[in-house]
Length: 197
Image 1 (cartoon, rainbow, N blue to C red):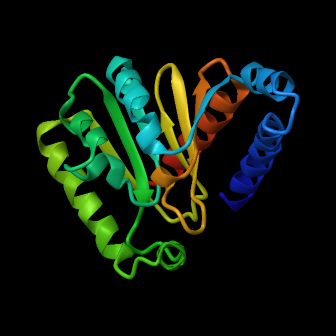
Image 2 (cartoon, helix red, strand yellow):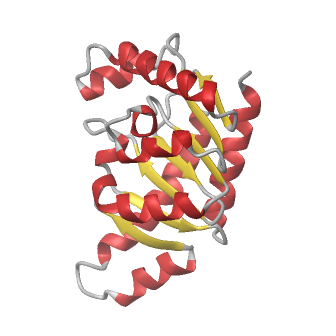
């Protein structure tokens, strides 16, 4: 997974670098490059993307999530958790296991002393939701995930696990399913999903 993470981060860093040039002067060149790659929009963070995400998830027949904690979807106080009761969407959540040696690293980065407890609450909430929604599947990984994947039928929402910010506070890219980035991250998700029982 580290090689996969490094590869995709380096690929995206070059594109984001190009995007940053848009603010220096020649705005249309890097923006055109992003559009050609299928990057439809860059949101400041999840709160700026939430309406788009809610709309797109509501129209999708699948919702696949790769994250460390997954609490954006498992915490009943967060808007995205409403999909846990949607029995029309095939849902797969791949979040960290409690035994993941990288979990403490992430907790230290975010200054969360109880990160294992946070993950345990998330797992419990997903498990409770499974009792009434058989379309929910959950698996636990042991990776240090440096990005968060939210895969839908038509779009990919991609954010990064910055060292001081949780994924929902980082910039979020909305990517078309026609993009090679969508295909690459979809393959990465499927590969990890198959890896863990």
